[in-house]
Image (cartoon, rainbow over all chains, first blue to last red; front, side, top):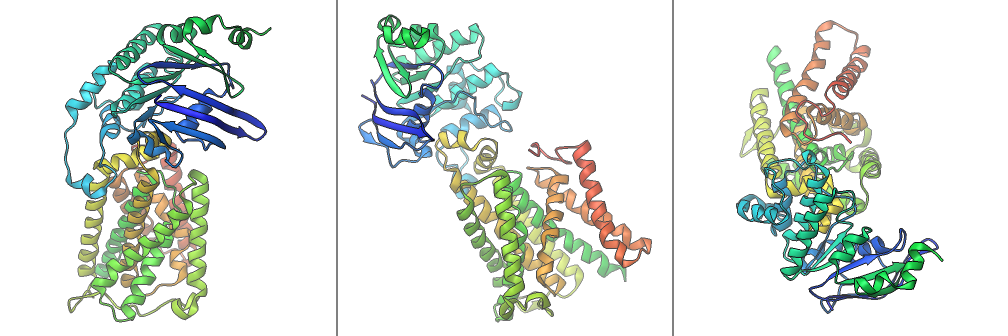
Length: 242
Length: 290
């Protein structure tokens, strides 16, 4: 297992967004987390990536307890993620975005002033992976929604890491781009990445994922192969009602 | 006697260039809405004067004023590292009031509202900078060094992180960057140069009191930064010249003294409103005010 959560709890006031949530994510697999709105999927992502503090429970990544890690320390441990809302730096260029994602010593002012590294070729390679064919000096604010989604994905995969967490990667994109993103995810999986996806688009999930986890009211209520999940009465119940 | 008047304006332009560019460094590039900048200016001024009065040579007192202001910048960011935007503005404004109150009430050190008169002109390696022209050249060199350093930083990979912090702090943290540390470094550097400006100001005017570092002064510096444009050091330089020179016209209109002060503020307000209406990003700004 690459990622495990044990009895994870998170509540907002009297509402439990995560209620003793146990999760086991296998290495080199595409795992999808599905569930109705408010079932705790995004909270789970935010707790794993340390953006939200958990109330109780444990998170084990690659055999290491990451409880004492800060959100910014997870990237170097091998966890990268995207958000439902694309998070870009609107006044920076495409090149700046990828350069920030791959550079290691830019937080030191002295090294930043003295060390000149040309990463243009590496940046172009990463952009080729996601198929973003815009001049690298284009500002993020000048990109279309689809292009911003691709840049967001490019930043997430730019850093060498083991686990890629994608929060609704095809929300609001056209069918052509949806297929493109699906192909990108497949090729990343082939290269050995473990991918964890939250997605509402069932066709996308069932076609892509090797393992599906269904959440409701902050708990995992079912998990298994996509075919089994589709016919699971508990899953049908939460989506369709009694 | 036009020369001393001209050199006084030129020296003040250099001092305000340092103040405005260092504020733009934190506000425009990093998104830190720091209204405590004027407090660093005051801390630098008082620190420099007190050190020189204690017998420390000016060549040491000048950087020490920056270091002391930078230390207060560190304390301020330590206290405010978890807040941002309007809340940060309010807390840093409160910091300005606290420092103003300390300067006003710690009379045994600052002489309170009486201020410190007779501040000596800087003396460097036995040479006293007494003439307006030499002081202008000295202030110009310091202003140039300030611009050079800040410009180098904002155009470096670290500068890119500053801008990313401003645009989306959470997005940057997820990429593995410690934004708290980035903001700490930025505020220390910004406060350091405000302290240097304070030292230059004190030894130029030769008299300081807490009123020299009041709320009105931060509004002036903020006006310069907004008129010049956020995230533009060049804009801050041009705006300093415009904002400091235009009100000087009032001196030649033979207006009563009671009118000149309010009229000056009205000119600042008109420039600010005009800029916000017609050039919301300022003269050379690269980012929106929001």
